[in-house]
Image 1 (tube, one colour):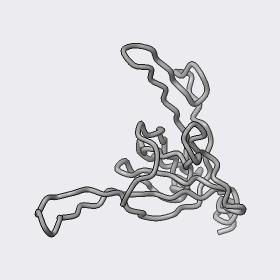
Image 2: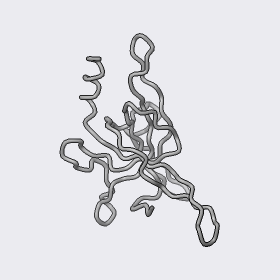
Image 3: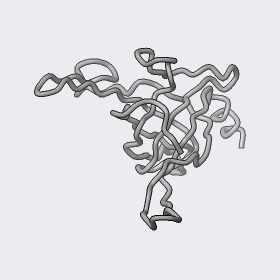
Length: 145
Protein backbone atom coordinates (compact mmCIF):
# COMPACT_ATOMS: atom_id res chain seq x y z
CA UNK A 1 0.00 0.00 0.00
CA UNK A 2 3.02 2.29 0.27
CA UNK A 3 3.04 2.64 -3.54
CA UNK A 4 -0.54 3.96 -3.39
CA UNK A 5 0.51 6.64 -0.90
CA UNK A 6 3.32 7.78 -3.19
CA UNK A 7 0.96 7.91 -6.17
CA UNK A 8 -1.66 9.92 -4.28
CA UNK A 9 0.98 12.42 -3.21
CA UNK A 10 1.81 12.96 -6.89
CA UNK A 11 -1.68 14.28 -7.67
CA UNK A 12 -1.17 18.02 -7.19
CA UNK A 13 -4.38 19.06 -8.97
CA UNK A 14 -8.13 18.59 -8.73
CA UNK A 15 -10.57 18.62 -11.65
CA UNK A 16 -14.36 18.64 -11.91
CA UNK A 17 -15.90 16.06 -14.23
CA UNK A 18 -19.32 16.70 -15.75
CA UNK A 19 -21.51 14.03 -17.34
CA UNK A 20 -24.47 14.53 -19.62
CA UNK A 21 -27.82 13.78 -17.95
CA UNK A 22 -31.14 13.26 -19.69
CA UNK A 23 -34.18 15.22 -18.49
CA UNK A 24 -37.80 15.33 -19.61
CA UNK A 25 -39.45 18.77 -19.58
CA UNK A 26 -42.60 18.54 -17.42
CA UNK A 27 -44.64 20.95 -19.53
CA UNK A 28 -43.65 20.01 -23.09
CA UNK A 29 -42.47 16.43 -22.61
CA UNK A 30 -39.37 17.26 -24.65
CA UNK A 31 -36.17 15.36 -23.81
CA UNK A 32 -33.26 17.64 -22.90
CA UNK A 33 -29.64 16.93 -22.08
CA UNK A 34 -27.72 18.97 -19.51
CA UNK A 35 -24.23 18.75 -18.07
CA UNK A 36 -24.12 17.99 -14.35
CA UNK A 37 -21.22 17.66 -11.95
CA UNK A 38 -20.43 13.94 -11.70
CA UNK A 39 -17.36 13.97 -9.44
CA UNK A 40 -14.20 15.78 -8.48
CA UNK A 41 -10.95 13.84 -8.89
CA UNK A 42 -7.37 14.27 -7.69
CA UNK A 43 -5.12 14.28 -10.73
CA UNK A 44 -1.93 15.38 -12.44
CA UNK A 45 -2.15 17.27 -15.73
CA UNK A 46 0.54 17.95 -18.32
CA UNK A 47 0.63 18.99 -21.98
CA UNK A 48 0.22 16.06 -24.34
CA UNK A 49 3.45 15.46 -26.24
CA UNK A 50 3.51 13.52 -29.49
CA UNK A 51 5.88 13.44 -32.46
CA UNK A 52 2.88 13.95 -34.77
CA UNK A 53 2.24 17.44 -33.38
CA UNK A 54 4.09 20.47 -34.75
CA UNK A 55 4.04 22.22 -31.40
CA UNK A 56 3.85 20.76 -27.92
CA UNK A 57 0.24 20.19 -26.94
CA UNK A 58 -1.21 22.20 -29.83
CA UNK A 59 -2.15 21.67 -33.47
CA UNK A 60 -3.02 24.52 -35.78
CA UNK A 61 -4.46 24.42 -39.29
CA UNK A 62 -5.56 27.07 -41.72
CA UNK A 63 -8.35 26.47 -44.23
CA UNK A 64 -11.90 27.73 -44.48
CA UNK A 65 -11.58 28.29 -40.74
CA UNK A 66 -8.61 28.67 -38.41
CA UNK A 67 -8.47 25.61 -36.18
CA UNK A 68 -6.32 25.35 -33.07
CA UNK A 69 -6.61 22.26 -30.88
CA UNK A 70 -5.14 22.03 -27.41
CA UNK A 71 -4.55 18.66 -25.73
CA UNK A 72 -3.66 17.72 -22.17
CA UNK A 73 -2.83 14.42 -20.52
CA UNK A 74 -4.81 13.96 -17.29
CA UNK A 75 -3.62 11.16 -14.98
CA UNK A 76 -5.76 10.01 -12.05
CA UNK A 77 -7.08 6.90 -10.28
CA UNK A 78 -10.41 7.09 -12.16
CA UNK A 79 -11.31 5.58 -15.53
CA UNK A 80 -13.01 8.68 -16.89
CA UNK A 81 -14.39 7.47 -20.23
CA UNK A 82 -15.36 9.46 -23.31
CA UNK A 83 -18.75 11.07 -22.69
CA UNK A 84 -17.69 13.65 -20.12
CA UNK A 85 -16.32 17.17 -19.92
CA UNK A 86 -13.58 18.30 -17.56
CA UNK A 87 -13.14 21.80 -16.13
CA UNK A 88 -11.85 23.70 -13.10
CA UNK A 89 -8.41 22.09 -13.22
CA UNK A 90 -6.91 23.67 -10.13
CA UNK A 91 -4.10 23.47 -7.61
CA UNK A 92 -5.29 21.16 -4.84
CA UNK A 93 -3.65 23.24 -2.10
CA UNK A 94 -4.43 26.81 -3.16
CA UNK A 95 -7.52 26.31 -5.33
CA UNK A 96 -5.96 28.41 -8.11
CA UNK A 97 -7.39 27.56 -11.57
CA UNK A 98 -4.48 26.35 -13.73
CA UNK A 99 -6.11 26.31 -17.19
CA UNK A 100 -8.37 29.28 -17.99
CA UNK A 101 -9.55 31.28 -21.00
CA UNK A 102 -7.61 34.52 -20.61
CA UNK A 103 -9.15 35.87 -23.84
CA UNK A 104 -12.70 35.71 -22.41
CA UNK A 105 -14.17 38.18 -19.92
CA UNK A 106 -13.47 37.08 -16.36
CA UNK A 107 -10.95 34.40 -17.52
CA UNK A 108 -13.29 31.43 -16.89
CA UNK A 109 -11.90 27.92 -16.46
CA UNK A 110 -11.26 26.06 -19.72
CA UNK A 111 -13.61 23.18 -20.63
CA UNK A 112 -12.16 19.99 -22.10
CA UNK A 113 -13.72 16.95 -23.81
CA UNK A 114 -12.43 13.54 -22.80
CA UNK A 115 -10.99 11.46 -25.65
CA UNK A 116 -10.90 8.29 -23.51
CA UNK A 117 -8.75 6.69 -20.82
CA UNK A 118 -5.94 4.14 -20.99
CA UNK A 119 -4.71 2.08 -18.04
CA UNK A 120 -1.23 2.63 -16.60
CA UNK A 121 0.11 -0.70 -15.34
CA UNK A 122 2.63 -1.62 -12.68
CA UNK A 123 5.34 -4.22 -13.49
CA UNK A 124 2.98 -7.00 -12.36
CA UNK A 125 0.13 -6.05 -14.70
CA UNK A 126 -2.16 -4.34 -12.18
CA UNK A 127 -3.80 -1.03 -13.07
CA UNK A 128 -2.36 1.70 -10.84
CA UNK A 129 -3.88 4.76 -12.54
CA UNK A 130 -5.55 5.95 -15.74
CA UNK A 131 -4.17 8.30 -18.39
CA UNK A 132 -6.86 10.35 -20.18
CA UNK A 133 -6.31 12.48 -23.27
CA UNK A 134 -8.44 15.62 -23.06
CA UNK A 135 -9.04 18.13 -25.84
CA UNK A 136 -10.08 21.76 -25.42
CA UNK A 137 -13.81 22.06 -26.16
CA UNK A 138 -14.75 24.32 -29.06
CA UNK A 139 -17.47 26.04 -27.02
CA UNK A 140 -16.10 27.78 -23.94
CA UNK A 141 -17.72 29.68 -21.13
CA UNK A 142 -20.28 28.95 -18.45
CA UNK A 143 -22.39 25.83 -18.96
CA UNK A 144 -25.87 26.43 -17.61
CA UNK A 145 -27.32 23.44 -15.74
